[in-house]
Image 1 (cartoon, rainbow, N blue to C red):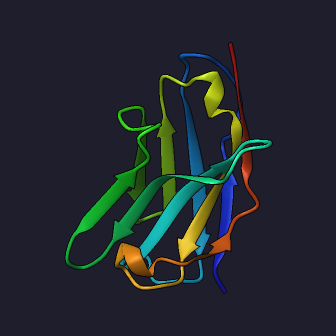
Image 2: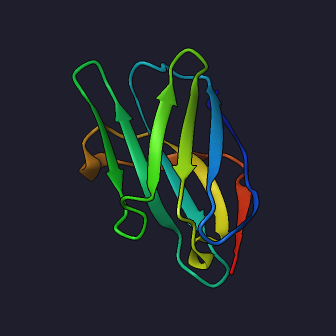
Length: 125
């Protein structure tokens, strides 16, 4: 059974940094796609960083809204995926989720079905 547990959220001032963690279990950590999504009240859910790990290559995709500020990293020894967030803005305030792809590796076949419980990030101005 896939399990994803996020942590690291909190309150931070604009311009600050946070690192979110996603402790993962229940699947092969040598070949997976995990995304960080966020949802703010009244807004649509947004994928901010998608990490694709395979035996062929590793790729990461970022939303334009966070490109250059957010970085997804992977610690295979700890089965943990991180979302490093810098230069935070009030509009980054949201609940952040770690989600595993249950579809194929091609982006056209992604199906993010396994969600963690989320961690709240609040950025004050």
